Image: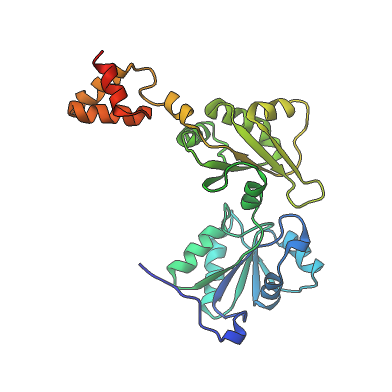
Length: 294
């Protein structure tokens, strides 16, 4: 197990840019006023910037009056460009990694660059800021204590279905990203596997046309039958409830006696089988015992 600590700097110089370091810089997801002073300092003082799209990052830099050399780093060039960025970091340069919006390395090819740096002992640090996932979750009015982020669902039908089946029993609030032209199909696919649950559709976050729609999956499907989806979406969906999990369980079509016999056939004692059935069904074991001895 390896551990890389941030390089030591004096207390008075704790925000100094350190050579040989990759800085993950969160950028605004819409409203440019959301950028932090620390983020501006880093992108102004590093040796170079690795950008998901140099055109978009160029506009951001121009808005804040920053001039800096850039290299592109995105999904289709991450392997060779990652090695190039690594070599410059190993030679003592500092680099800021920027996505088009939000936090680098989250549902983003920056994940690979962070791993590459970690494997080669290169220091990585993060400049926190905007995240569409956390912003949407906070606005959803759904439980926020436990959640899972699934990013974009696969466009492959089988992979998509398999992934949804895998997570449909999760009690945590679930979050997806989706593009407008895929929204209708995605809502239908989620509904077909999850059933009708509460959902918050968050689009154009922090922008002038920000919209948070809190409804149900069926309500969202109905709404978008006659309304064209616009903007990038974050979908926040309530987790599975106990009743849904029970209804989808292997024993949902079994009687209590059949459920009990299932565990006995697996080699359990009658006492352990009774406890297992009670646990599965969320009832006291004496309820199962009485049912079996009627």
